[in-house]
Amino acid sequence: MAKEITILMPHALPREEARARVADALERARSGVIESIVNGEVTWTGDHADVSVGAMGQKVTGEIDVEPAQVRVRILLPWLLERFSGPIAHQIARMGESRLRLPPPSGS
Image (cartoon, helix red, strand yellow):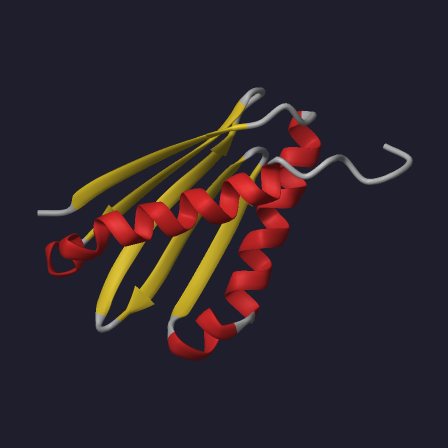
């Protein structure tokens, strides 16, 4: 049985800017250190992303929805990874909130 984690990250950015920042953070994570350790895939449809990551022989799936005032991240952890749910949620929230609270780029 999978354990579900839901993380809500408020933002005050235009939806398009929030989506661009989330997409950039995912791409940096996917192509950085994470990609050398795990297999990851992100598929965007509008403001919704389906995410799958293979780690330690387990498959982790999730969804990201960029909403007008928040980003909703939902992750399903296989039971073997349940004990990491707290640290995973904390890390995602910390990274997401830091990306979403930055001021908009100049000229926006």
